[in-house]
Amino acid sequence: YALRKLGRDLALARRKRGISTSDMAARLFVSRDTLWRLERGDPTVALGTLVTATFVLNLHDRLANLVAPA
Image (cartoon, rainbow, N blue to C red):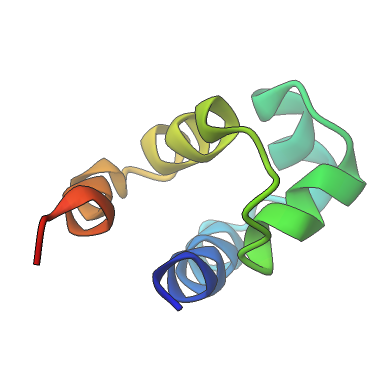
């Protein structure tokens, strides 16, 4: 559930910033298909891609919620 929500939030943040899927994928060094999977919360996307996306969109503070013991 947390990954799906984070994926939706990443997609929303990307759109609000006016970043196209091709530009975002290029910034992450992944295909657009991988970006779409990331934005759907697919757990098979590499952790490094997720972390990089949060930094590109300035949402890296959200990562703490994923690893919180609670």
